[in-house]
Length: 400
Ligand code: DOR
Image 1: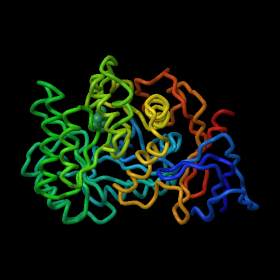
Image 2: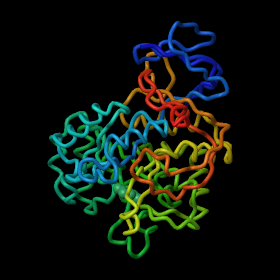
Image 3: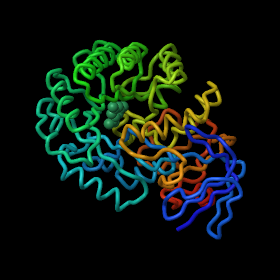
């Protein structure tokens, strides 16, 4: 199978030029100008070709909560958002705590065959907050463990989990929210747990990734940890950088103040934040009305981040590509997220001049829970290409 994308503006973390990209047998085979091939050709003129996006933080809810999302609907939503690789959280039912359940998810992902699926294992078995012996039996398909959705409250258990993870070269992804303080003050809850997890990361030397950072103080603890040369990475979500607490929408951690948002954006500019992850958290309307936290975000992230960070804040498209493709790939232990000969042909064609309204009726996700509904952003995903195969085509959607 061959595919040639011609005349696009080709942008990844390290390059920005006008030219052609030729994908053969799923692999990027040639990059240059005036490439001529007798194969399917996509006219990229006036469009931007980037590495497809990679999402480190996603909830596809299978097994157990497939009425909210399943691997198929989630994968369709992912490609509509320009993603070809996702890292799924373990807060399923049963919880992803052993290889049998994880293998089930990976097998289903391969059957659906739209995106690379990586499955996180829980830090404690079945989220019981105390048992970590299951970590020993995880095989090398698991690169990250996380209790996302909640926190491992016992610091000694977290310490020992980090030691086990380090020995297996696994990254611990931390959902920093202190249950004991959450009723008192969500900010205090995030700050204290971020400090604890950064401190444990320094002590153990375990690679730690801090999920959905939302406060200035939490970010300051992370910066301090990074400065001391420890393996600490972090992410922000599109909603935590595009909204302020004037918007009343339930998500964990909460949408914060203007000053926090400004600080996080400055940190992105300074290269202190490693990735943008969506925390795609689909819920039904009914569950949302009962107070379920979260945003269905994988279909809207590029346009929100492009509009907010590149158009409004002057970030380069190279940097956005690094945050959405190159860096998450590295943290997940993959070799992709760049447009480079020899890498998998996972790319996305976008129209950065087109402004679109977010219409939840068009979502492929089962979750239509978003505070961005009806808002307009620049940057439309036109085609998502996985290993040289078109897995999402906006033109077809427009014709329906
Ligand atoms: O708002 C959230 N929803 N934050 C999380 O960390 C978990 C997620 C979910 O699973 O719904």
